[in-house]
Length: 153
Image 1 (tube, rainbow, N blue to C red):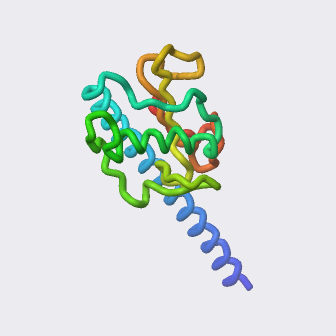
Image 2 (image 1 turned 135 degrees about the vertical axis):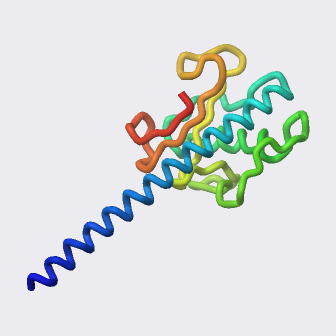
């Protein structure tokens, strides 16, 4: 009985450590992807004179983020921008159809659409970065405004 208890405790520790390591790796990957996309977005601005456009609304949930994520993908990843250039070569793993939508968007390591917002005409109080753009992951919990969010501000 004591041996089984020790095995159960060790199994619990291993599962907990593995879960933590997986989440930590996904957070590091999201931070790296955000940095890389920031560079691609800045390159887009240098070529075109403006940041990639987003819809008028700032999304507050991963399901809302799909449209802006898709628009960003179209502008920096597909070469459908005015320069006809691919600024960020997304991998097939990064581009997926999520939720009930039929178009692909940029997904974070947690399987949610990345949030992107740029109010180009006039700065909106909902935009955090007043001189550029907002780019973020909703994190493991998929909820906006929580401690696990990963962003560029």
